[in-house]
Structure formats: C-alpha cells, structure tokens
View 1 (cartoon, rainbow, N blue to C red):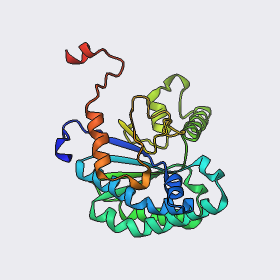
View 2 (view 1 turned 180 degrees about the horizontal axis):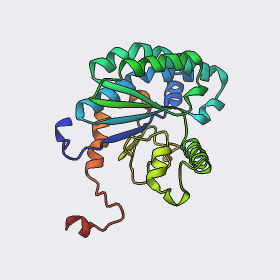
View 3 (view 1 turned 90 degrees about the vertical axis):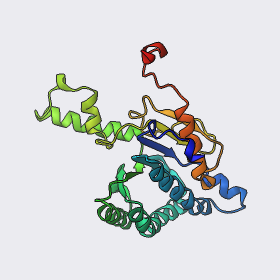
View 4 (view 1 turned 180 degrees about the vertical axis):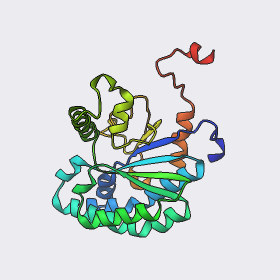
Length: 245
C-alpha cells in the first residue's frame, strides 16, 4: 500500500491529534492510564512510518493546556509516562535520524519532565531526517496570546513598529516559528474538532478523521491518511481552472 504513495506530493508537515486512549482502555475494562501506556506503539509506528515515507515534520498533540484539568491521578501518570517514554525512545530517535523538538508552555511541566525532555532534545539535535515536535502544555489560544504579548512588548519598547506587523511577524512570534504549517491533520477516534490545536497554523490544513482509536493506529493507517491527502485538490482560494493553467 505504501508503494501507492506519490513521493512528489507528500505533506511536508503532518500534525496528529492522538485521541481515544481512554475509550480504548474502557473497552478493555481497564483504567484510562492503561490506554495511554498502550499508545506508545502507535506513536512509534506514526513517527517511524512518517520518516520512512519522507515526511519532514510530525507534530504530536501530546498534552494540552486543558489536560491539566483532568483528574490528578491521570495527570501524574501521564507525566511519569512522558518521562519513561522519552528516556526509552531516544535510541529509536537516534536509529531513525529523527530530531526532537517541542512547543508549548514546557516551564509548567514537572522539573523531571523538563530535564528528560531537554536531554532528548540535546541528544537528537544533530539528526536531520525528520523533526518530531511534541506539543506539551500547548494550546492554539495560548500560543496566539503569548505571541500577542511579545509583539506588544517589542512594539512598546521600540523594537517593532505597529505598521510593520503582518502575518509573517505573527508567524515569527508563535511557538512554531521556523516550522512550516501542517498540510495534513490526522485525528483518531472519529471526533470532528481541532481541540484548540495549532489554530493559526491550520488555516489551510487538510483534515483526515478516522474512527480508529489511537492505541490501534498503525503504519497502514498513516498511509491511508496520506493517500487521502494526495487525492485532494489544494486550491488556496483559487479555482480549479487557475491551478490547471
């Protein structure tokens, strides 16, 4: 199936909302945390599969600012899982020449998480095949708000003129500065919303919604999403006739 992919029409950046861990665990008669732990294979398949296909950026919505409102037991378990996963997956990242990066208010993470995250970022910094971006303590509204605050501060202090502010200026102040906008968003579990994820950046992103729960997501599902993307006409406000001409 992967042979059907057109290598000349790949999305440079794929964003993924990894949804359905809790429902998957409930089906097994287990706690939600079991679903999160069982999702590591899905993460590995999505990341390795993307690198093999030739995708340059993959952003995983790992933990939103709203997720802090979940039960304390689940949040603590998620933080512990993050630490252990980062530690154990560095070899996979190195073997696949994948660089780790992050977006979000990572200063709000527990210190141990911050340390493991920084260690993984430092160790993979020279890798060039693909960049894996973890969105941690991230939300689109938070990102736009912090960008607006920094723009206001730089304008007040004379480093920026109000009349010079344009879309590129905002791009540069967002947490995703230097990362291309995602062309494809994959969301598992059948939910049809973007859940405060990359609100500015997804202005022209193609959406692919699958009923697969995230722990069951495998490379073949990634391929299905990319093939769906390649079947679409991306017009960016133009007509089909304009594109053909």
